[in-house]
Image 1 (cartoon, rainbow, N blue to C red):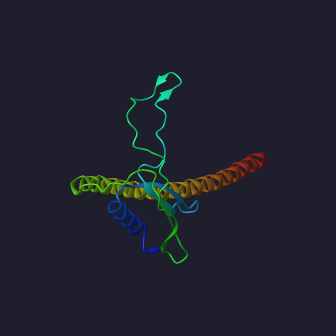
Image 2: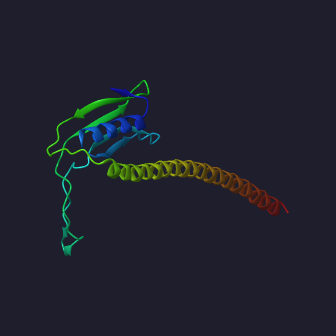
Image 3: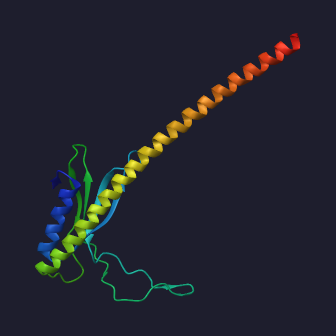
Length: 170
């Protein structure tokens, strides 16, 4: 399957999850080292993985509670293709736990939270890009100041040498 955008792929898999009876979770992404844009995204079942330990070296790290994780492997991997469209490159359909279609009201509340998380994540990405642009401008400015400083130092040295020559002549 192909999608016009990452958001379209996420929306599709989220709708699929709702129909089948599980809750979709954004699991991981891979970014370009050049410009930081997302190259692939892994979406899966919210019961993926196992619960981290609640015990540390010196006692409990946090209050123990029941885990919702069951090691489920169901997932979808989408990558941006050369055409610019998002292509499904891997799909694991099977779940290792019973599926249950959630009630509309409960799912609606989850959608509002998910939307807010997506909005905040998008805002964070924009701020990071803006910060990177400012950092690049600042580095360019610092480099220009350093070059100008070296040029002025060279000119001052020439003037000092000329003054020494004039004094020695007198």
